[in-house]
Amino acid sequence: MKNKKIVLFIVIGLSILTFIACRKDSQENQNSISEIKKNQQVEDNLDQVDNTNKKDSLDSKIEIKENKNIEEDNTKNIVTRVEGRRKEFIERLDNIQKELDDLPEKKDSDAGVTNAMKNYYGKSYEMYDEQLNEIYALLKKELSSEVMKGLKTEQIKWIEQKEDIANKERLKYNGGTFENVAYYMSLYESTKERCYELVNEYMID
Image (cartoon, rainbow, N blue to C red; front, top):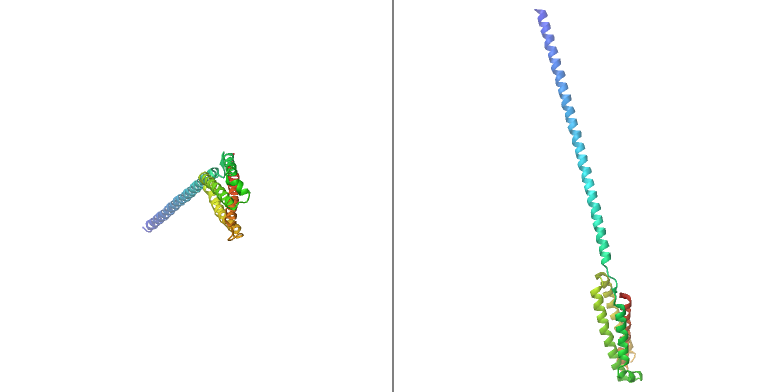
């Protein structure tokens, strides 16, 4: 009877050990599976990050290329000179002087008759000023806005200088009969010169 109890205890002990061993193996297997899943998740995350980086890099390259194309298009579209009009306007300006030389008051103006000089140079200034306005209007229409912005600033400065010079010339004869002659003569010379400057600088044949 005593031996049967010992055998029973041994059997129970072996059963417990077997159960513990099986539970340990099961836990190790579970841990292995969890580790595999964890590693797979890390790999998936790395792949996702890598794909995102590749996409961002591709998008960045496309954006850089598009910006470069836009810059090239803008450069191509910048018009700094009006083509095929220079000769035409040079001839116009030359013809104005020819018309002025044929005016009746030109002879008396050259002779120093004050009233004739006033009329002659007043008319001369008006004709070149009208042509200057036509030239400026054409440039405003044809040139790029960037170029025209600079020209506008330059033109405003020139107008101020033109008036200053003319007034200084007028004041030399302040109160005298030659006062207005000096004023219109200065305006005529400055405006005529400005016409040729704009044509030669902003127009080509």
